[in-house]
Length: 342
Ligand code: TXA
Ligand code: MG
Image 1 (cartoon, rainbow, N blue to C red):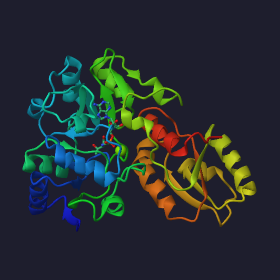
Image 2: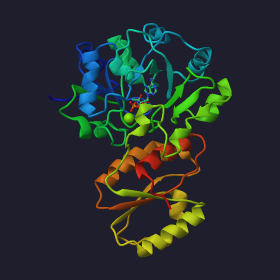
Image 3: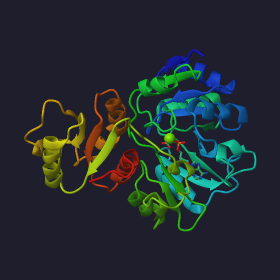
Image 4: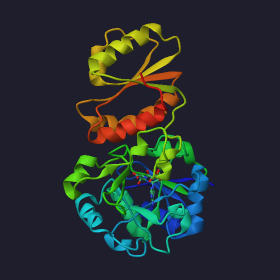
C-alpha cells in the first residue's frame, strides 16, 4: 500500500484523510501528545487494521478520540460526575478518561473490558479531522509496538510506511509524552498511566486520586493492559544515574573514564555544565533543562529514536525531577531502561 503524506494545515488534505477513514482505512494524525493511528472506532474491521499495522497484542485496548462531548452518547453507558468536572477542566487536552462502555463499542476496541478510554485531543488538525469524518476515532500511538511513541511525522513514516493509508503531518507534537489515563469508574479514581496532565492538577479539580501502585513494582498486573508490555525500548541499553546533578555528574565522570563500550549520554543542560571532561568518542544528546521539565518531556522519544541511529551500545542518562510532567517522563524512561539504574 502506498502511504500518502498530507498537510495538517490544508483543508483539502484533511478532507482526503477523512474520506479514507470513512472508507474503513487507517490514517495517522498529530495530537498534542504524540501521533495517533486512527480508524473508525465503531467499525471492527477498520480497528483490526490498527492492530495489524502496529503488530500490537489485541488484548490491549485503544483510546477513542472525539471532537465534541455529545459524541460520548453511544460510546459510554454513564458519565460519572467527576468525569464531567475533569472534562470541563482539561478537554481538549492530554487526559484519557476510562468510563463504563456502551454496548455498541466493539470488543476489539476495549480489549473485552467493561470500560472504554476516551479523550478529546488538543490539536487543530486532529479536531478538524474528527469533525470532517464525523466518526469517533480509535487511535493508539502510531509506532510499531514496543518502539517509542512518534512525536514527528517522520517517526510514523519510519515505522509504518507501506502499512497504512496515509499520514497527516502536523510537525513536532507539543507535549511529547502520551495522555494521562485515569479510571473514573472506581472511587477514588486511579491513574493507570501518568501523562500530560499531572496528578497534582487532577487533584485540584476532583480531590485525591490514586496512582496504580503496580506501575512502580515489578510484580503485579497493571490495570491499563498496555503498561505490562515492553515499551519505548531503544536498541542500546539504558542506565539511569541517581542523585543530585552534582552526584550524577561525578558518577558520569567516573563512567566516562572506565566504560569500554561505545557510549551515549542523554543528559540535562545543568548536568552537562557540571562535566568537565567528555571524551570525543562519547555521543552526547542534551535533552533539555531540569528547571523546565516540559523541555525534557518534549524531546525524550525523539532522543531515544535518534540514539538508534548512533553507534552506541549503552546510553547513560539521569534521574530527572519526578514532579508534575516529570512523573510521566520518569515512568517512560524507567520502562525504556528496564531495571537498569545506578
Ligand atoms: O496521548 C495518547 O494517549 C496517545 C494519543 C494518540 O492520543 N494514545 C496512546 O494510545 O498513547 P496507546 O494505545 O498507545 O495507549 C493507551 C493506553 C494503554 O496503556 C491501554 O492499555 C490504556 O491506555 N487503556 C485504553 N483503554 C483502556 C481501558 N478501557 N481500561 C484501561 N486501560 C485502558
Ligand atoms: Mg503506545
